[in-house]
Amino acid sequence: MTVYIGVGSNIGNREENIAKAFLLLKNHFLSLETASLYESKALYFENQPDFLNTVFKGVIQENMTPQHLLSLLLETENILGRERDLALPKGPRTIDLDILLFGNQVINKENLVIPHPGIKERLFVLLPLLELDKNLKHSATGEKYDIFLNSLGKEGIYFYKSNRYIENIK
Image 1 (cartoon, rainbow, N blue to C red):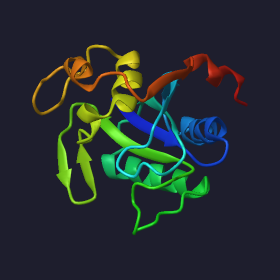
Image 2 (tube, rainbow, N blue to C red):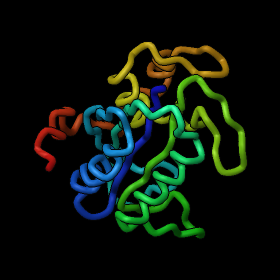
Image 3 (spheres, helix red, strand yellow):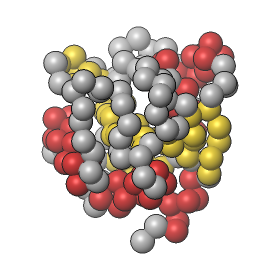
């Protein structure tokens, strides 16, 4: 089964933070690849550094559940120094890892919603997501994600580096 993980960083060496997340996660997948990096202005709480964003596409083992993947992502964030500020949940962070899609599953739990509800409104998620698979559809509605690109415009987001940046990671 294929999963998609949204990745962002805006504290410290953003590119290195994303690369380290990739390295920590890759051994837990049958395969893991990344889209290109995009730089974007922060949403919601704008008085913070710009983000680097990408999406990881992974093929998981049959026994990995959405909850297990969520735990793995939270553990990875913790290892990379993510500190959660309950007063400012959308504030600066070394790394942010979100399950965007988990196969075709639809999950609505208090701690996990899949497909991620922000996909359609976040260009910094849509661009790298569609770079990995331009035909992706919303699991519940069947809407192709590419239809949301035109409504968002391109302001505030910039191509940063091709996905080949990952080849230099050891």
